[in-house]
Amino acid sequence: MGRLDAKVAIVTGAASGIGRAIARRFTDEGAAVVIADINESAGAQAAREFSQGAGRAVFHRVDVTAERDLKEVVDRTVKDFGRLNILVNNAGGGPWRTFEQTTLEDWDRTFALTLRSVFIGMRLAIPEMRKAGGGSIISIASNAGLRGMPPLHAYSAAKAGVINLTASVARLVGKDFIRVNCISPGLIATPASRSTIPDAEAAFARAQAIPKAGAPEDIAAMALFLASDEAQWISGATMVVDGGQNTAEPVPLILEE
Image 1: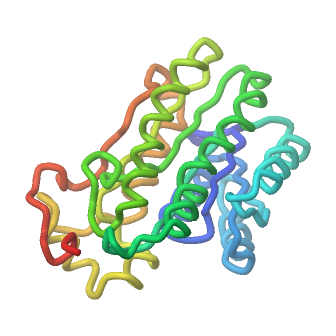
Image 2: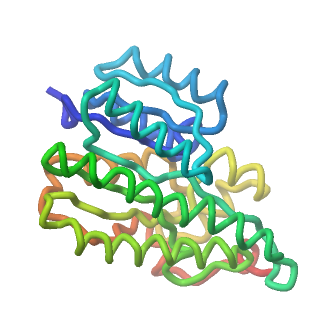
């Protein structure tokens, strides 16, 4: 028996990185997972690969900045699987810029991708979760949202919004047995971070109390817990998974502008 047997989940940004690790872990535990991503080739490949396990995975192309795309994936999920139990708002991102170099376009794009998409996803998922008798909404925040992280100014602000939106929506829907939580990762070695930071694993290891870079699977483990019935009395929480980064001094090599 898997920890998510008979559950139906949507994971945004699940074609790579943290989202991919979450989708894999959910299918391994028996869930039917909809991989919602803009990357068609990687998303379809992940769906084929993950369907070989205990659960089932399908891919839907989704631009999370487009409300119509998110509505379509929720509607299709309910039509195909009969319900929606879990939503993971994972898609997000923002440019590495000095404060002076951050443009209004950077700001608006980051908020649309990182915060607005979470709001839309929650608004669309909650009615379906009410029909299902409850559910779990998990959003991927960031330590940047807890204490700020230059040169990620727009991203830090957007992730702070994710954390506070999580808390406010949790108060609203608790009566419906819908749990709303977020995960605050530390420095995770993903394809995106490796493309931005030279020797990311070594740089990240220096920044955290536990001297190793985080892996997407570390975040997937927490997401599985929050999605499962083991976390049935946890809502409105920000779960920090960061190798002790918040106990360590910022590393200038990474964080300076």
